[in-house]
Length: 586
Image 1 (cartoon, rainbow, N blue to C red):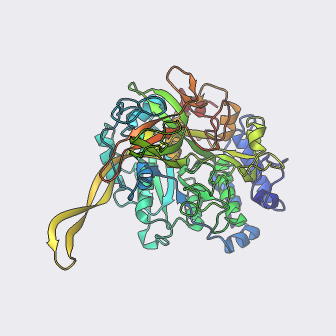
Image 2: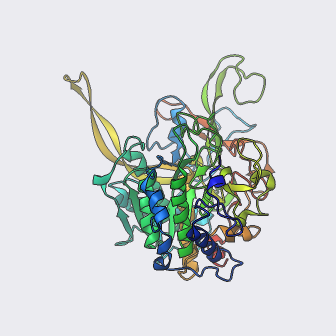
Image 3: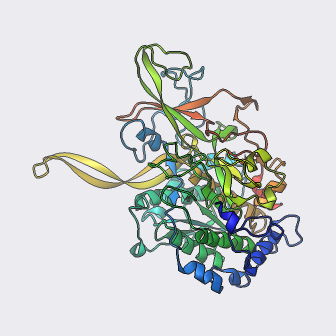
């Protein structure tokens, strides 16, 4: 049963299927007040309330919610939405190469042509970008002179990196930016309280997530204050505790979170009580004027038949959207492949989805990527399959929010990702999409552990002595884990443009003004002539030790198709010209 069938708020009150009981008057009151301050057509638009006024809605503030919080709140384990080229390389034989830097690589999209490799899609493709720098991203997203001054962005992940501030400062200075000023970066991390490290994927993986998030926000809002909250695990109860602290005390103007998972998984469903607690916090954030962004996921429609959606991935039990991104009170951030040219301007953009091939000797008669019945012997591109892509689609668990009515095609809101028709229109995601393709990703710098072989004989262990050393490395990173903090940085710039006044929940403004030029409609594989090209294209990731070259396609997000207007791959589109200034004026 869809959760909204049991935990729906009346449409007359909010137009949103919230996960609070309809017999709780505070639930309907909160939703109505949150809508009033978020709707540009309401006389209460952006008349936000102080935390003391909103405190009565805090989960646990009433007897009913105390009962809900007292049992079953631990919840599921959330996963980060960070990806890099190493995840493709891992399917190319061998493990991931942490911090691998391709050589050669393009400083901007299309700079270097990989003419030494077999042509595909009818042409020789370019080498993948090395990773975009903060200056390139600021230019592409048209931040002008805005820097997020006097704005606070909170980042919520699990655990924490012991070298994050040093890494972020080194990264900034290496690329011509200012390091953090005194007290500009702060964190709330308690390593002694950490639990579930192994089930959560290890603290190193979350340190990489934190590094990406911090450096991405700092890239687009270099003067914004960043408050990092490292939950004690990736379990819902710990993540909720971090969100509760931020929202109940209004400790930030914008919150970005780059984690999530399927509501329905082979390991069990996220409970309705846990979802109700998240949902109530998000509505409280809207009422206080806090903007909340969540990554939409990195596995397209999360189909269990895909590598990333199956048992070795997120363990999805059916095609579905990711949560909390699918909650109607957050901005779900999907992914694009962004082609930044020599002058720093976006020359093309498509939905992010990667189908990959590896270079291999092709026996006579075998079929590669050339499209014919068979390819001649010699080096050919051999398929690795569909690897990952931006999350999106129609939620079976949430009713269509009022701001999506008449803005989302009925063919999407009325059809679930399983292919079954929905009885009533449903919430669809993403809302916006930003750069997330690791092959057009952001260059990120992090201190990682590297194994150094001394070459000396070790008779006790009968082999070479290996020593662990800490090394600062830079590599291109993507995933909707990149897209969400990039949007948060732009929203910090918008708050600065709004003379420091909070924006609150931005979705109603985005959908109301979606036809304006402040959004770029992502409609397929586009070139700098503005034409839409239906034929596929891609980039070449050169070989690294032990692994051959890889071809990565652009714009293949499985069943999630980019199209004119709202679509399930990129939502309303990507930020366009003067996005921060125009968002502030909505």
